[in-house]
Image (cartoon, rainbow, N blue to C red; front, side, top):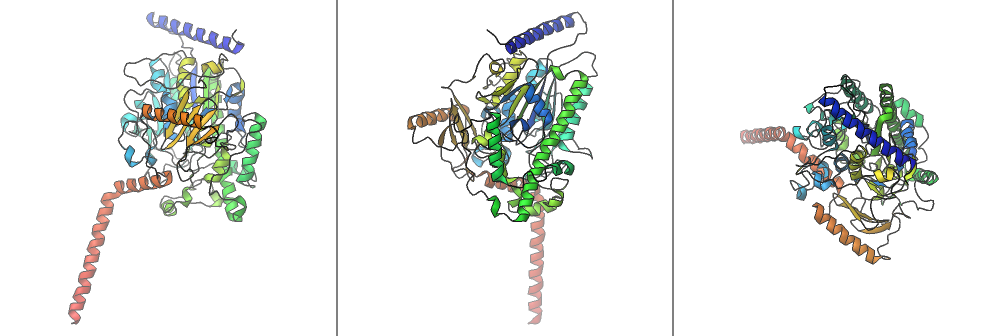
Length: 600
């Protein structure tokens, strides 16, 4: 017997089918009829940990995302990849990152991976996006925000199914101005509909991303006939540099003054109270070489606490602008006929560029400072660092870049017409499941010859209550990005993480009782460990994984790639400088030689 939620979904699907048939008849008779199928809005947050969202226990005020969470389903066991571009590729295609061409990100691409299949750093032939599929089904398709999926003209959103787009093709950029945030980039590459674009004077990333999406939908509304739309809002919040208006940051004065140890404990307790994790789940250990809060100077404590305030303010500001978007849809009469998917691309960002050699000089050259007087405001460079990042993922282990749960288990909220409210949906789900879920929800079948097959699965059985799982306990689900690897099979997880925070050692955990990955089960369960190692080896072979060298370190690789980029961009200038320096040295030598000859 179907649940009431399931019955509503079936009725909605039947209504959509009838609407589609009527639209076809209208086209044949030259009549004008509205297409009443639901809209789809995907809201992607950058670098938010499992407990960063307010509905998942975070401190930031996020009433609009809270409303969506209360209306729909919250997923407590949803996994993504540990890095942004692979996650975005999988979200938009439903395909494993190694088959999309975005196996990792350009910033950490190692020498042995360059130009290899799956590592082109752009969507490879046959990879179709959700926008491609929805556009073919008659949807208007729009994208604003971070892209980071290839910078050639054919790689930008307009080349992958989006009718209109304003996209940043970089891992990040400043949120107040059009400028880069690291030496890997010499400018902030924004494009509108595939062409280089400039930002407005009053730019703030979260505001602009919503403003431009509304302008695209307003243009779409000029048509006499309703067309359903797909909106992809890819926020820069809360990627480095973490930036937010001062008046919002000040609302969090004192909230983080007790430090990351206390925050880890309070986040764990709230997660237990909310039912997000089991009551007896242990708290993950702090990563090796973490700073102790009490050992910091008063000045450093103030800077670190303020940085975390800015992060909370950036989340609140983003939520405020999401609220403007929801209000726009309400006024337009579309809010109740829109499917919302809200999630994060990976876990919290641990990088602390302020401590990287040469970064202070680069900041001075590019108009950045790290002063508590304007932390988070225009001209400031802010990052929370590994200790706060670990707290942002609490009670999970580690953070972004790593296949530990803190890097890959993130919030997911799905709400919309006929989506039943579920306090927590505990089934194991993957980022590759989002595209097939949307297609299933809309009853769209997009089969094309030579297209790369979707590897994810529809979550509709979970959303309609007809199943408690979409993956069997005996099915192995693998993932890998730059040597950080995981394989989940039922309740168990096999994982390996690279330096500097990992040690390249494979470990086995039971996530059902130990989501924080505190107790390695290799010695107790060698048979399971060996079988899952064999499963992972099969995954590597099937999906064309090319691991980096054994000594791979993402921080060192990023620095090396950035230096190479700088040299490539400035080789002529450097060569001319070298020639001038050599000429000057020659002239000096000649002058000294002549003086010596004259004195003899």
